[in-house]
Image 1 (tube, helix red, strand yellow):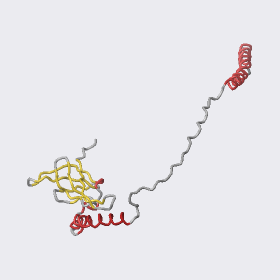
Image 2 (tube, helix red, strand yellow):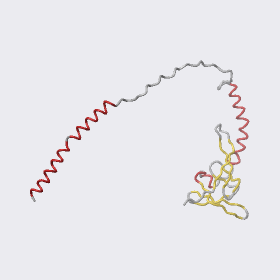
Image 3 (cartoon, helix red, strand yellow):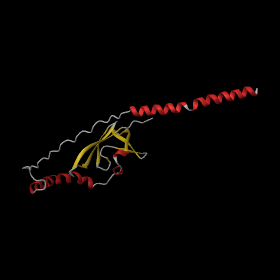
Image 4 (tube, rainbow, N blue to C red):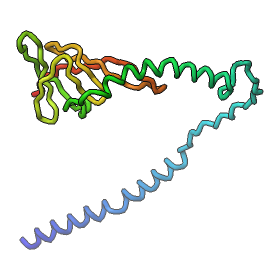
Length: 180
């Protein structure tokens, strides 16, 4: 029995000793061969495009900071200033409603009611429900409700455009479907 165990240990040692050195040498040889055969493929860099300077030519148009341009701007401003002031003045003189202090993107229309023949929209803001009808105001841009339907609230807002002039634009709150 001892001889049999000894034979088994001796056979295992011989098998392991035979496998130890040969794999590493073959691997090193293969790596050398691959390095010698590998050739990098780098495309050449294109030459930069030739720069040709352009001569500056003064146009015959009005100078951007000339007196003509200034007079034209003042004429435009004085003509529209009165109409712009008339658009905003009534909004500045009235008492603000509670929903005017909240941005429109924080509001959601969640339903509508029919009260005495008039549609009333249910608007949710910060987990509170509000009833709004035609004539009420929403949002910070003087948004006056012009129409309430079962699916949306349509309003007219007064905002400043890029030139600083007051203009009217339409905005809507759509009915929000309940997500599950």
